[in-house]
Length: 141
Image (cartoon, helix red, strand yellow):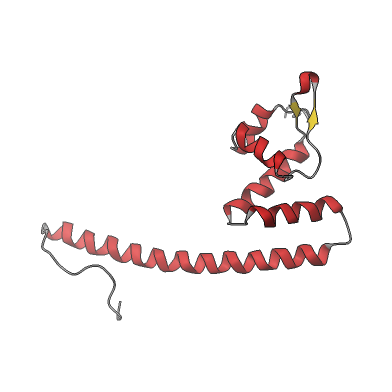
């Protein structure tokens, strides 16, 4: 297996993380890197494997709905090092509760979507475009 260089360009990091070059610059401006982004020859940004690993964490937390101020706070705590684990735990527990609630809402939405798919499958199978109330499942559904 080839060794991956620790000096990655912004384009390489964009490709590996799925973030745009613009988003990477934004993350840097927002202070969302654990370590300052290094500069190479000509002032070009140079990233490490640790930067890519941290960005992966950030991407997952953002995808789960973590607001930027919360992600920034979490980054600050991690950057500060040991001694603030209680605050990190509190932050993550709060986010876990938010994600759990979001999953519940999505599950309710999926139930409705499944119902609607079933209604339209029945209508298509019957070959009928008959008008019928099919806006919501009945209380017994």
